[in-house]
Structure formats: structure tokens, C-alpha cells
Length: 215
Ligand SMILES: C[S@@+](CC[C@H](N)C(=O)[O-])C[C@H]1O[C@@H](n2cnc3c(N)ncnc32)[C@H](O)[C@@H]1O
Image 1 (tube, rainbow, N blue to C red):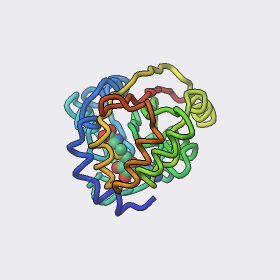
Image 2 (image 1 turned 45 degrees about the vertical axis):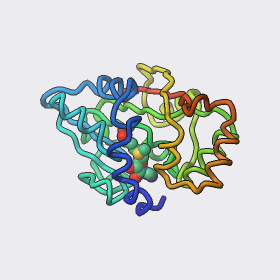
Image 3 (image 1 turned 90 degrees about the horizontal axis):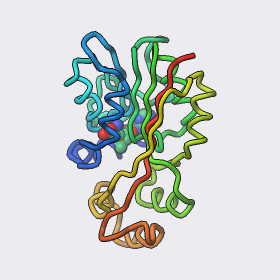
Image 4 (image 1 turned 120 degrees about the horizontal axis):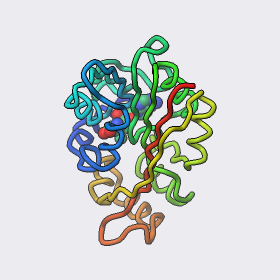
């Protein structure tokens, strides 16, 4: 993963509508159980939306992201979190795991540094042609996983599944293509690959929010 690419996009992610609000964000925040005295690590913080909302609820939040431009408290990838075991009451990670080179190692790391709970939210797998569209739009895309794959990552990381929710997030296609600077030729191909998933300039992103507690 090239950190510089993400740094160039930092402002776009800070102001992006789909990142700054939504039912998925509300749920991630609620499931971290923020309150005064609760510590939370926000992994792959990007524009910092999860951290901002958790702080509004009184939690003490540390942010981590490998891209220097995201200006996180700590610069590191999810696969190698520079924190001791059980450092945080909760660990959150929203709409980022599909970029991780080694998602299982990342989930194990999040479980390791959590004292109690891990809350992860990400887009879920739709089809191989949608995966191709995602990679073409953004070469840093690795893969969207299905709910059963997420269950197995949690199991292997020693997390007991305690809650999960599925939702459809509306996404406006043109700003999404612009955010990653996709060329006009690639934009046309992405639209072709997504086919009838796009309606009136919008598409729906199936999303999973999943919460585990340490065994
Ligand atoms: C879509 S943004 C995250 C959005 C943010 N969590 C939110 O809720 O608005 C994806 C982030 O993943 C980060 N990222 C990419 N590869 C990563 C990795 N291996 N470990 C941790 N973060 C990574 C990028 O730097 C970027 O900030």
C-alpha cells in the first residue's frame, strides 16, 4: 500500500459525504460503547470521522493510519499495530479493511490490542466484476469479503461474535470516481463493469457492521 496515494486523497476523505455520516457510522460508534473513561483505537482513521464522533461521546481516542497525510496520532498499518496487548477498551475500523494487504493479520492485531471489543464495518462482496471495478477505480483495493469470511476472521482472531448488522449505503458514483482520480477511459470501464448496479447516478453498497468480544 502506497501511503503517498492516500495522503494525496486525504482532503477528499475528510469532506466525503459517505464517510462523514451514515447509519454505519452511527452503529460503529454506538457499538464501541463510548463514554468518559473509555479508551478506543480508531484503525485506518482516514478523515477521522469515527474518532470525531467517539470523542463527542466522551471517549478517549487514539487514531492510527499508515498514510502520513491522514495526520493520525500514530502512523502504522493495521497489520502491525505499535501498541501493547489490551491497550484499549475498544478497537474500531470502518470502511478500510478492503485495502489491507493481510486482513486476517490485521483482525488479529485489533483483537490483540483490544481489552474487550472490536467493531469493524466494511463493504461486502457482491461479484467478481464489482471487485474488478473496485480495483480499476482504486488500485489499492484488495478485496471485499462476505459475512461468512468475516465470521471466520473473527473466529481465528479469538473474537466471539456478539452483534452484526447489514445495510445498504447509497453512493453517488461520479464523486466516488473523482475521489481516486480515475481516468475517463477507466471511469467508462468501471461503469460498464458495475452495469445495472448503477441507477440514476447512484449505487448501493452492501455493508456489514460486526462486533466481537475477546474470548
Ligand atoms: C476509506 S479510508 C477510511 C475511512 C475512515 N475509517 C472513515 O470512517 O471515514 C481508508 C483508509 O485506510 C487506510 N489504509 C490503507 N491501507 C491500510 C493498512 N494496511 N492498514 C491500515 N490502514 C490502511 C488509508 O490510509 C485510508 O486512510
